[in-house]
Length: 111
Image (cartoon, rainbow, N blue to C red):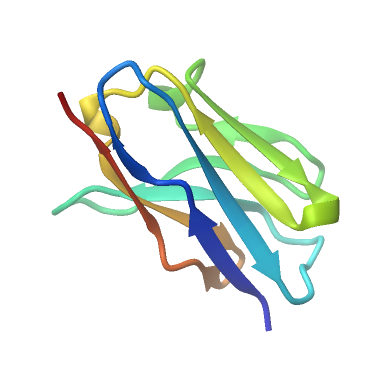
């Protein structure tokens, strides 16, 4: 049974950076996409960035050039480096692989 645990969220000012981490425990399938989603209050959960089994990385248009997804297979961890954060990035951020979701980490961008 795979479990995903996120960390790294917090309160920052516009223009600042955060790095989110998602550590997987258990056996990870190499056939699933793995990535980050976010959900703002009253809105649907949207894809932010994901890495395919072939290591292609896709980003939502709103974060291209600001966010970077990376993966450390030895540590079973994926990261989301978020630079130049904007108030509209405020949301709960969730790690996902296939049917498995983490518990989320909250990101708040406010002056």
